[in-house]
Length: 265
Image (tube, rainbow, N blue to C red):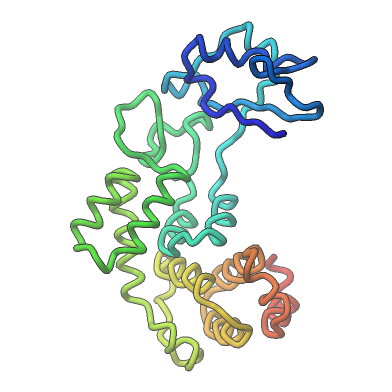
């Protein structure tokens, strides 16, 4: 068996004490029920420094090996996001605002307006969880007014992040249609050079949109008119996408781009 005692560090003392027999090295048990040999038992909780009510007594820590798990970096989160229906605008924003997934424990983060910091009074902040909630709101933007969407985003990722994400949404609205890119990759409008927000939204939107090798081919033709940074971002993101990497690796245009630009990767 694999048993996770989630949020153990927030439990009441009688509950924690009741679960102690499960943490013994030899003959662990739950009440009078023995835990099958070879089972894995682990506990989760927040750091004490987070200030959200976690604690663990010495008589508990003596039974454990404590491991601190880091937050995902922006690059790590984007790999997960690409395969979990996160809105391309949210992905583009994280790509251009990687400090939004920093930790207050990283140091020099006092001026970071996006992240959780236990020394400040905060209602909403950017975390992997709140970014997913923000994505759900953005997917429903056609049902909301501009002000309602901004209020919803503020309520889940905070004011600084919501204002910035709304700017990225404006970039999306200015982009050429997908059909125009696929049907006329050499003639479709390209965002102005230096407009990083629009190009990021364009690239992550394309990773989400491409459904065939023909579309990959046409989009690469289109994107070759842009700076190399964006070509690399598209090809690397597609290669890491669990559901689309096979399509990419069997696409001749993708292979030719890799051979021609291997010095950039």
